[in-house]
Image (tube, rainbow, N blue to C red; front, side, top):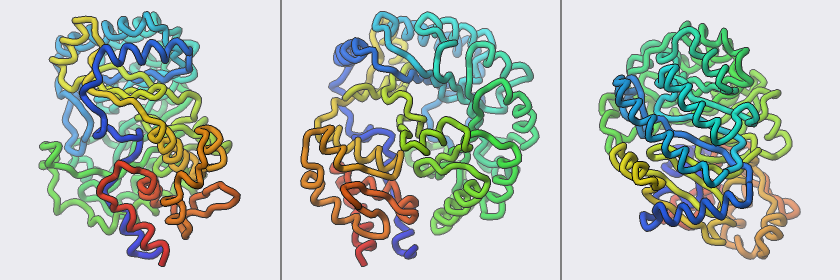
Length: 445
């Protein structure tokens, strides 16, 4: 690939877990607007994914960009859990058709066993957890003890996700997340309790090199997780002050990042993982890989999904939701979250109602991300538009090595796959910086 084009891999931009992105949502959308939208949505009995945000972590990882609270105070965690249970009660009268549950954070495994049991007992009042298509939770290997995984499985959890990030001891020390390979390997002995095990990896971390990443990948492959998510570290000390603990001179050069990503991708494909979207990988017998094989991958705020459900309801502070044509996000601070829930109100900070144009562009962007293929004939029929006229400005810019149009179907090439987010920006009318047009200028030469 042309070097000047490949540099666009490092351009800033959205990951498009939603469209329009969160920075366009407005704070004139609160509890009452949310309640009305939720009622009309749940009346349809549409299959839904439920996300619960557990904000607490035992230690601060210096790379973290999540919305978290560092505490080991059990009373503080219990106070939060009591309010989360109240929020679940708020949702119960709407009788949502929950088919999947995901516990994220933060660190859901930072709940002790009794607290976890309390949460699952309340969830069973909302839905019979044993009937779910999937019940997943994120796990920090440092916060679980022998027997914890069995406890989670006994309460219906079917998929767990380990925040591995990197196995190199020096890198782990540099990011304040020391968890030896042996620690994760020991936990993997209980993998038979679950239908799937996921690993999260980061590249672009301090002290990482091609050699250290290769060593981490060899260790990951020896453990053979069912899914792997590979994300680029976002160094933003202006947004997250604790990132100042990472010395910028220790970060790998930006020019190395695309090569790191390509090498990781090749390594996992050689290990017979299916490449999903831009940054997910799954074993051939995993439901995510099977969805990719039939062109049915979905996308939500947690990343790429097997596409069983498209709509998501979020509970907990900062949790985001996306159901029907509505987006929402909960309050950030525990104080505001608690105040709203105690008033028996959904703790909504902001939201967004999609226009017809938003919905059309979201369909195109998600099709590109999920399946690297857009059938504009289908887009036109579904939205009752002339799709080729509608996107007359964007489509000519993709007649290049990045994507090929044939009979109204746009297919992203292998080159385009590496620049998938950048291609999506062509269809993002809210991207005011217009940096994405550099792609077209390069690709037309």
